Image (cartoon, rainbow, N blue to C red; front, side, top):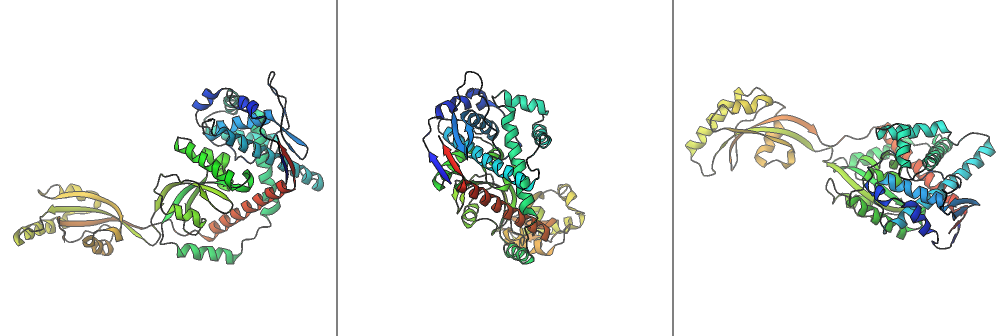
Length: 447
């Protein structure tokens, strides 16, 4: 890529355009369901009366105006949930400019293909309107209300339409050109199944993910700096899904970064090392990997598939560790008489409450391996609904009932799920390489 850098002379004008109403932007509610940032740029449009316009970039002779750049910055701010500050405005400008440059490259490539192959690829207005209707519905609005909402924040409808038109068109082209050619072999699926089976006993993680593509934003240093700013904004309240939709280079960006449940072996080693140390509800610091920088949000964590979970209830008589043999015998006789009266878990507590000195309660769900040694044997042997004989602990005597039993984890993905996941990963890699090649062969001048 031939890229001629000539400073940021237009930044002042762009900031005026992007932040004409900073207080309104800072207080707006989250807008969900927006497209990922990699979508096509509109042709240069006339700036509003009284607002000067200049050239922000030239992409193979196509012009990106400062008005287009300011509009895209507004859209990013409105849809990412990140509050604009003097510190993060350069990041918004950089992301907006990169997106617009990529979109021009995508449109140029699509027009070339359409001309050569005499096919229609670029999405029409009906396709774009369907996406806008979906976005409006997610925000409990009609299309007109949603566009009016954006207009009230200084965002023209054409800005959103062009972003969506590029996203739809480029996705359609990548899927059409490469989707039918991708072949996920049985050996690949078998290898993935073997890996998942080998890791089944380890914890699984439900995560949200963002990847800042270093090649796309100008290098690893830029990616790390941008990721650090996004982490700071999310710690201050910016919604993770909105940030993922606008900044992530992964396919999960369209779903707000939701990657579902992942097992060890499915993520880069650097990412897994951090996941192992996180607790549900935590947001990671930037994690550098080969192609960029990850940000993780750990939604939940569960035990591995080989672990056994039981739900227990108990009826107990308090008994000091040094109680006499007569006291222990009396307590044992009381619980032994209670046991046949307990018909099921649902009535255990009510039945036990009829006997003075007996305390009953729900012990909740736990891994069998984590139970007190005295309870483990009973938890392993009892069927669901069965009640143990009295069990002696340092606190007293206990009747334990197993109310439910299940294997931990979510099971190993079937062949179809694994094939779909592998195809998605391959298609995403192809799309990123395609864009890298377009950038490298382009002449791009930013001013």
